[in-house]
Amino acid sequence: MALKPVLGKLGSKRVVLASASPRRQEILCNVGLRFEVVPSWFKETLEKSSFATPYKYAIETAKQKALEVANRMHVKHLRTPDIVIGADTIVTVDEYILEKPVDKQDAYRMLSRLSGKEHSVFTGVAIVHCNSKDNRLETEVTDFYEETKVKFADLSEELLWDYIHSGEPMDKAGGYGIQALGGMLVEYVHGDFLNVVGFPLNHFCKKLVELYYPPPKHTLHHIKHDSVPSVETFENISDEESDSSSPIQYKDAIKMDRSKLHSSGGGCSPGSSNIIKPNCMVPVENWNGVMENPDKFPSKIVELLDGFRASKALFVASKLKVFDLLKNKGVLQSVDVANTINASVCGTERLLDACAALGLLEKTIQGYSNTDSANTYLASDSEDSLHGYIIHSNDHLWPLFTHLESAVKEGTMQNYRAFGKKSENLFQDSYYQSMEVKQRFMAAMHSIAKLTAKDVATAFDLSQFRSACDLGGCTGALANELVQKYPNLKVTVFDLPEVIANVSHFQPVGQHTAPVTFTSGDFFKDNLPAADLYILSRILHDWTDEKIHVLLSKISAACKPGCGLLLSEMVLDDEKKNRSTALLQSLNMLVQTEGKERSGSEYQSLLEHHGFTSVKIRLTGNLLDAIFCTKC
Ligand SMILES: O=c1[nH]cc([C@@H]2O[C@H](COP(=O)(O)OP(=O)(O)OP(=O)(O)O)[C@@H](O)[C@H]2O)c(=O)[nH]1
Image (cartoon, rainbow, N blue to C red; front, top):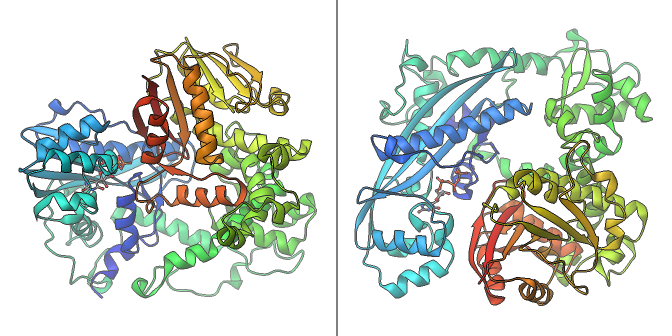
């Protein structure tokens, strides 16, 4: 089969897509590529005039996006990926480079410029091969671009504004999505359609052929970064024809992976399982597990089927403090872990093996140890620990999700079924009913807030504000980040008395926190503290539209003209079909609250209803996006 070997070459590698674009994810997913998504934090601010041609700008941006992710994953001691893919799509018309519109007016400017004309869509792509040597990251970049010409029909003002109000233009280069409503504006397309959508799949596959099926004596050094590929087709290649299975310099890395696999033990007999016996190894071909017939295997479905097992393995290892133990002790054999956590050797070994295969632990002949990312995110005492959220997921969300079927049928929360208690007053009844549950919930919210605070705090320039009030700001994690970023800002965290009574042990040690103060109250019932910036982080998604109107009208009444309102939530795309994490979060809200996740347009209309204008949305690529607006 002609297509199989091209992408199959990536099957044994850890591939990361450095892009938050759901379209790019979908294009690559649809062809069966297995990859992780780590959106790039690189801000698209390169000086355009310093590039001789627009495509060089797109290529450089794509390269910087991919390198930022490769470096971050390496520096943060996550497992270094083998390949990071970055892309950047731009539109050029009349010497202008158009990227994503920043607001509706900007979308209007772009679309009226495109009306009735032919324009070019360029996507620059960077394929970064990574190798970690002596703790240093080595990268080899291959890049290219693709151009597609698109002609727009004449757009009437009415059509143009109708389209803008659909919300579709906002996260798309040139302000349109050819794959959806935007397709109605297009008279013709010359070139690769998927290139317009955000990823030139055909050219990408040709590049892979160049990289993985090079003609004899060809090496990566001969690849010109912006060269048009010399391979015209990838149709007639197969593994047999190839003289190389990977770019030469990565063969060693593959060998290393194989040796790791060879050292895995297999038995489940107490006491003996920590001894790895090389003579027990059965000769197995194809250790990398590259599918012979990937197009016949429902890998996405199998991954989903397995998803709950992987989650539960992570939860149980966290609950049993495996990551804490290994952080303190370094390397341990399964029997020692089992003895310390008071569990069976047989069960512990299987759990440890599963965690190692999931990339959470390292397994060597000496035993098991934490990966760097387990030390950073899974040990309960580390600065960026997600332990609180993991335990909350296990103890609170898991039981709720077992009643998802009822939640879907009934359209309501499942707190009573899961915990035998009605949630008439959501927070009092579900989260603050006992000290233990309250602390667990606060630790969970703190974990998520810590993980997202930087991206939320820097999503917009808030430097003009002097006082902020974070309504429902819980432990103050976002407030603490904001005062670091904006030294002239003072933040009041306003939350229920039960919460404020418990915030002290979440405060950063040795950090100057004086500009953050805590005030107790109920934002539905009490007067709001005065401020010129109000913040609602993960608040609106808990409530119905009716309750949101009550809250927004209170905030609006407290705001003077020019005051700001910052929301942070997971923002759904308007079609509600692309952002799976946010859509799953909406199910999460169904099982436990009256609320739901909403799209950018839905938030916009709620906000505009209360006199907030210039609504801007920034998808951060992190677990929370940011929405900013001002009171007019
Ligand atoms: O017809 C369409 N044209 C373009 C798009 C989408 O537009 C964006 C382009 O933006 P960019 O390349 O900067 O990518 P981001 O979305 O910001 O994601 P990164 O994290 O990769 O920077 C891209 O999403 C295209 O898919 C479209 O959908 N239709």
